[in-house]
Length: 386
Image (cartoon, rainbow, N blue to C red; front, side, top):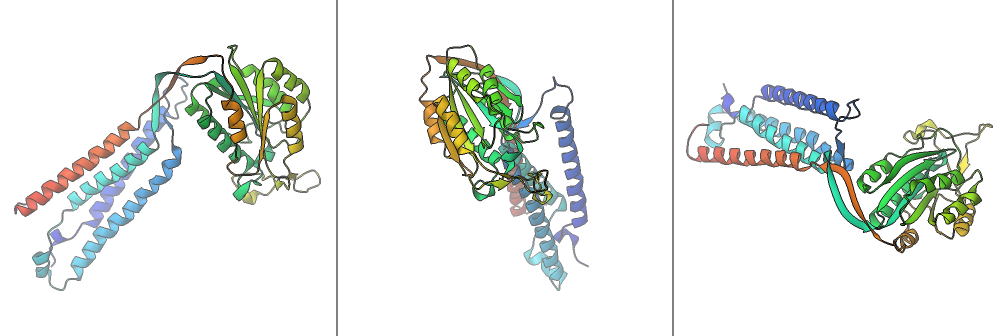
């Protein structure tokens, strides 16, 4: 009969792993329920600044596979030895409890490092600073035609628009940023704010489902953008982002209003001359494409001539692009060359980045693991029992 001290108790370890996973994720869900999903509008909310790193969570199931492969491999090796008496001559006993203890620490370190990478934020802190007095407002087309995937590498126009807006915020010296969206009607999406992190989150949430009234009412969008700016004597610029496929008039009066208020206009046109079909559901290509009353698929094309006419009237810069990452250098030059009459003092609240909390937990787990392994090696060499 083999000495069980040389093999792992896989059933015990499996049950312990499952129980801890259930406890951990139930606790996590309860925490998010209290904070993130509270119906009380006054309640604190947790946000993750870098949600793109959530894919690192795949490291956890990879670790599961490696861990169980290792302990099963050890058991198989021990059981393959013909004489049980030989085992003690070249192998040391193992502890299933200590094995789970190591799993517990490594697993938690992985999870909390992933959470730290996602940068959880809650609570507010006051930020002060100075910036050039340029106010920037995005007027973004969210009509269905912006779902057309005729940009490079099969990207949609709206995805390219999001990248361009993020780049503009990263590379301009604007003090404050605002955003409105439009289709057949106009909807205020983000009031003028100095918190660019918040602006980026609003950009990521943009979709063509936000406005049901379809169309491309550029004139109304430009007219409404005027109301976004402050009364301060600062340089102001509107960035119009659209495929310019069609518009519903009112352009001349809107441009006249912009000039009257001293507001600059920059235009980013997105799409191709050949055009593309409009998916019914951008998240599900198999859903088919938008059709007209005759049952024919609708083809949408960028209208550079119309956009150039608007830019010419407004004496502003224009970029028309079909790239997944539009080259917006001309727009950047126009915005960054705007000389403000003064520097503005900024004071605003932003979410406190709490990445240090999960990072500290992960480091504590790794430190305990190192100490535990060091003590175990010491006791083993000293000939002492665990």
